Length: 203
Image (cartoon, rainbow, N blue to C red; front, side):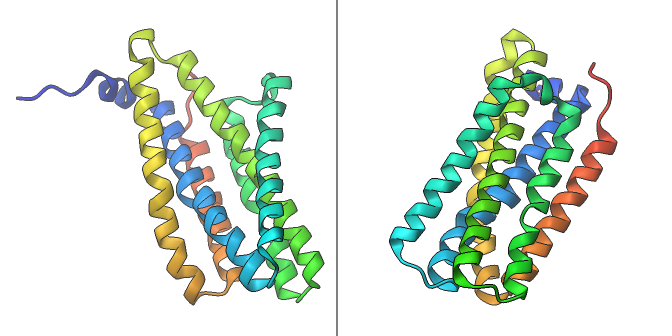
């Protein structure tokens, strides 16, 4: 009878690691996938702006992620496992002003500022989540399993992004963007509530 790999045994025994992996998957499957598909679509199709403006939006998004990483390095005590659901929920709620701007038919320059600003802020928050996850795994995983556990987590997250993008492509073509944003926010919030309830004091 085949033996269960040690890394899987370790993850099964430690419930918080299952929560970490679940939230990592949610952050990449839902949020990262949505942003990767929705940002270029909204800038070039919804707003009708040029490729240069699309490049500017991508640059602002990258700056948001970079600032999130810098914030973790400056204030590491702010970021710990039990705060992760709140941060991930915040990254979803930050998308709501975009939906409000679309519903109110705001001017193009206002919508561009909302899309790039809100998505950059959300990307920064998700970046703090990803770094906190990685730090948690490094601290709480036995030395002999660190590479295996982190490799497994990263592999799952890398697989989640293209799956999410494949799902959001048809959704964006056939559903209003406001409805998609509402769905992203709702699913993310429910995931965070479940994760928060499932968390236990660190073993």
